[in-house]
Image (cartoon, rainbow, N blue to C red; front, side, top):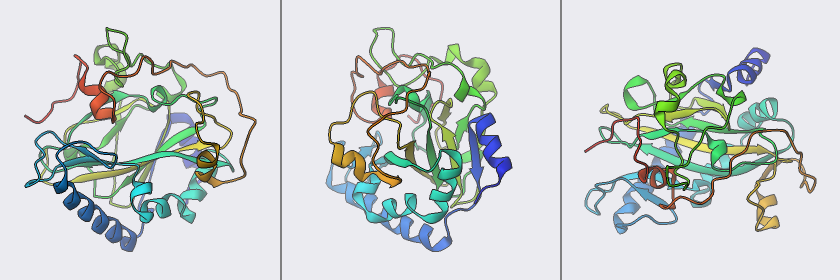
Length: 289
């Protein structure tokens, strides 16, 4: 699925986009499932274990900004990350042993889809090594108008920026005044529906509000080398191993000399990244009224 040149580009930049990995049939199935899930949000008025709701959500007008852990919600999401093309790409970028760390479906509806402030995924879940990446599955055609993910090349080999607020609590974002040069060098991850981006866990990224009249749904998977262990610990070893995509269980974590800052004390607004970031006094992207 990818060439050696693309592998080298990932190592150099910390991000690549692979065109149209998903076929039209799979895309149609996923979109049908998403439509059912959004319709189901009419039954709730608060965030749940499945739904993270947009401001302005009502049962009469359901607005969902995230489906949490979609691989636990419907089997098609587990099927995608375990598919042969995706595994082939992951083996080239990470190695033979792979574990799913987590997943989410970020939904940017037309005109109001919420932005995500600048951050590094590594700040949320540091491991014993950083052979970890996130897959971004474009479920809609994505261009500059509908809020693509923006990634700054080369930042995956640099520092871990502070994601805490002035009060010392984790907020899940970086003060934009401290990364002006990096923001200026960011590139959009765009493409046709079915394309996938792959960005390193330490790569700086964010995304603006969707101001277009088209949706931009992005299915995200976080995948780690099987010998990368979360520093926050493993609560359930059987569940941990159930997320192996390839390879055997590992009980000898591989340690690497990588910069780490723990996401503690935890965010005052626990929940999704949207909730974490909502407590911050700093922001870069414009938000819907």
